[in-house]
Length: 127
Image (cartoon, rainbow, N blue to C red):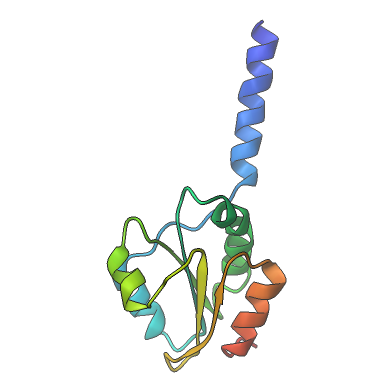
């Protein structure tokens, strides 16, 4: 019984370390990102959304790899409906790609893999 409990504890620990996600951004973080002069991706979703959870590791990996070149932000629309309205979000998940000048250059709704995330950022000026 004790070995079974140890196994499940280890399994839970490993599964939590595999799942990576970005912390929900604040309106101030959005303003700072848009003023930074870097390409920005704002991902709108829900912490409880299955598709959003599936994308989370890709977003976290890109955010980590390109942290000095681009801004990757997540907005939990349940917690911040004002930002969702400001960006006219109608379906989830939604990704808004913004260039270094603060102009929206691309928008995508639904699942987006890591290659799609990078393609959107390159359209927004990522080098």
